[in-house]
Length: 471
Ligand code: ADP
Ligand code: ASP
Ligand code: MG
Image 1 (cartoon, rainbow, N blue to C red):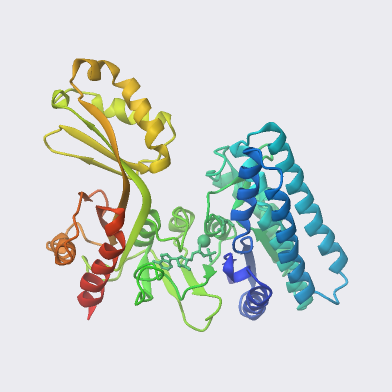
Image 2: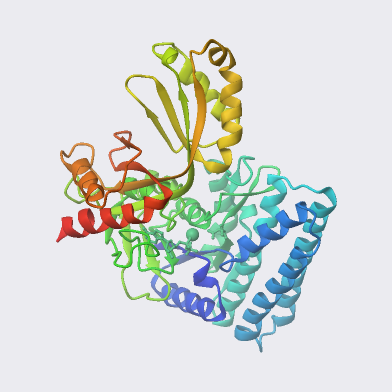
């Protein structure tokens, strides 16, 4: 029996035309596969708008969320009016949209009254777009004669309570999916599941992090034992670089799980960084395809790399970072400074993207999101107060506007000359490299550059190493 799980991203379900195209894709594939699970994101821009409404409410603004409600009502009504006009369900769907938006407005009002919001509340608020869209998509599929039902992932994906970045509890999730989705699939009903969200064991809504619908699809795909998971987006597949930065970025036909994990971790927005985890265990291939160009095959992501080791396949950039440096001659050989520093960083919940330590041990540099720089510095200074007073540690300081540029491809570590090619490309353009990290992973080499040099660095590596390297 063949099973596929298909996820449609924000732009793929972001307008009347896109939803209609997505429904056609489902319809066509419903004939080819025995069992089909659909996962949908909110319409493009909706999650941002929902979050903006709640944040402005927390800051004492009682108006912005109200105008957001009006905008969102118009956008969702347009779908019903455009695609489901003569439908018997029309009134129910409009009432569903109103109900969800009224609930959203009520949440924002409480946030406004309290003057603050919690990450727990943000998860309930920010996942409202998925809840509406799953119902619209299921109605659209029914309209086309398919059997379909919307399912909230709060019924399926059980997570821990790390709000805004929850971790799925796979055994519990598998049981729920088997109980709730299994019977639907056995009756050829297509479940349309909300992406992005889950719930704790107690039923409190959580989300899997921004862009998390890819991850939802992989979790569900694994739990229904999909033969394949497909993510439908607005580009032809995983590209050699961000197409907004590099105009001649090309589709990469095949990538390995580890290459893609690295790409996503280092900022390629095309997939959520944790997407591959549930797939690796069961060896399920993932396809990235273009909703608006469905006949091109897209990118296939599989377990085994098949390329020549050391081939750089893609280049990415993560912006908005700061480099926090802890420096001092007295740090040499003092055991435990690094451990205490990292404990202080962890106490702030900051994710460290990269660590650079000079072999002289005179400094430790941590690359973290800029918004965490202040609290992290304060925590490190508190932890190392004694060493600072003794001048074993001279200072803790931050450099902002840092970008990590990463070149990704399997086998980089073991292949001589790869770093030289990357540096050669940058020196051709007089780009200064602040620091480099290589070796922690087989699949990437990362450079730190100033924000002003990032676009040029990506373009240079793309043209000199990727394009010239393959032709
Ligand atoms: P979706 O809503 O379908 O999940 P996203 O906007 O989250 O879509 O991700 C797709 C976008 O990621 C593309 O439109 C593209 O601009 C961007 N992107 C950045 N880097 C890459 C890359 N290396 N390959 C493909 N797309 C990329
Ligand atoms: N709608 C969510 C977001 O914008 C999840 C997703 O699109 O994958 O982050
Ligand atoms: Mg996405």
